[in-house]
Each structure stands twice: as structure tokens, then as C-alpha cells.
Image 1 (spheres, rainbow, N blue to C red):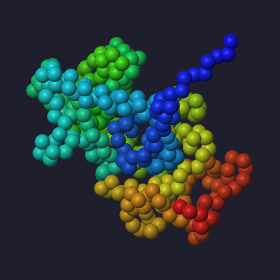
Image 2: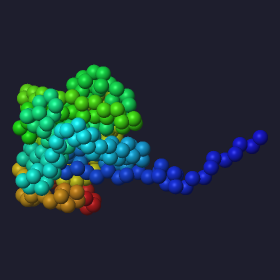
Image 3: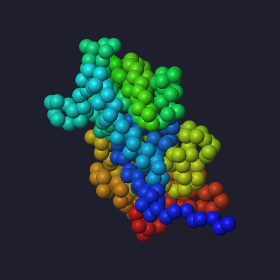
Image 4: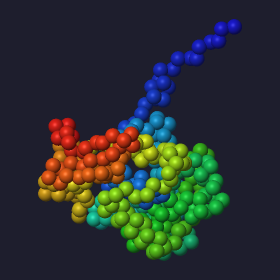
Length: 313
């Protein structure tokens, strides 16, 4: 008997094949605070990974999580807790700025009237989790189950001068909810600050979290092809050894002695020279007068960075 063909559903097919391009964040954020791999954070800050499209299902999962988070705040307020999401003095959403303007992140809000300590303002950290992750948090507590979320809370409390946070999460599949308070730990927060400062100023790539390309944290990393695959990073000002971060969230080029706009940074210029750790090879020579750097590639051949000044930036 001949098998019947699968029913045609153009709408579903169009939804499934949609890939959402990923934009390059210009500053570090709370997602970086929770990232265990310093090299991954550094690649992102230096725009060293090639732009990729996320699979449609990943984008939809993120959309669901972002849609559920306001519900978490509503459920929290339904319990009698007041959650302030706007700075009443400025009318701007509460956020965190740090590292001379090279870090910015919005926060979920500031809560007052929390039952366990009604007089103490609490920074709100919310999360919409899948069932497995939610059950683990509910069983073990956020400190053991999601240390990345605790790191976000500690850094946010430090920057907002708060001594308590309330962590509220839910199972985005059935609406089960869990809440617990997090106490400010100055040593933990300062360690995070020092780590981010180190990454911000680093001219060399930090040690990767694992040397195996199929490591759990590496397989889904946006920089996998550069870090493990021997691929060249894109050419832009942040991958160039002439530029670096300065105050007020700006980037500066010592080659042309000027601040770089965001458009400048994305475009790069013909004088671009890669940061050595972004070249899949070993540096063997440099000519300051010619502004070239020579590398030996894994196949034994040599490549001279800067030799072809006519190449488009």
C-alpha cells in the first residue's frame, strides 16, 4: 500500500524555517554575569564571533520566557508585594550601569512589602524555566540549582546598593511558582566585578571553559566556530589590536588617535590588525613600520596580517 504524503502546511513550514538574526550587544550585561566561560564573554564583548541565526525554536523559547516574566511580577503583586519597575524620579526603567559605561542591564524591579521582611526593599530577579530546571530549583534552592542566577542577583544588588533580593521563578509549562530570598554577599559581588573588569581590559583571550568542542557549555556557544573551529573572527574595530574600551562606554583607536562611533566600530578600516588570539595560528613575526604581523597557520603555511591593505574592511 502506498504511503500517504504528509499534509501540506505552508504556514507551519514558514514558522519553522524562520531564523532570527542575532544583533551584537555593544555592552556587557547580566547574561554575561551568569556565563561561566570568560572567553565566551570576551568574544562577545570584542564582537569576535561571526553573526549567526538562532534556530526558530530557540527564538520562540526566549519569546515565551520574556512573555511570562511580566506575569511573574503580576503574581508577586497579587500577593500584596509592591513592585516598582520605573524610577519614579526619572520615569526610566530601573537598570544597572557599570564598568565606565561598558555594562548596562535592565532589572525586573524593586519590591517592597515582601512578607518575610516588609520594611526591606528587595531587588527582583525573575525567571521562566522549563519543567526540569524549575523542579531542580524548587528542590535544591537557587544557590545550588542556578548559581548563574545568583551571580546576577549578587551583582545587581551590589550595583543598586541593596542587601536583599527576591528570586521568583515559574515552570513555564504549567505555571508552578517558586520564590526565595537571596542575601547580599559582598565578596561574591566584588569577585564578579573584578572578573568583568579583567575581561573588559583583556587584550588576550581568557582561558576557555573546556578544551573539548563537544563540551556542554561549548556546543551552543555563539563563538564555537572561532574558539574551537579555527575560523577567523570578523573584521571590525573591536577585533583590532589598535582599539580598546575607554571611559563613558566609548572605544578608542590609537592608530588614528580618535574615539570610535558605533558605526566606526562595525565598519572597521583597511588598517585593521587582528588581536593575535583571534588568529588561528602562532605569531612568529611583526613589522611595526609596515604594520604587519606574521603567523604560522596549523597547516604549516604563513599568513601576513596587514599585507593586503586593499582588502575591504
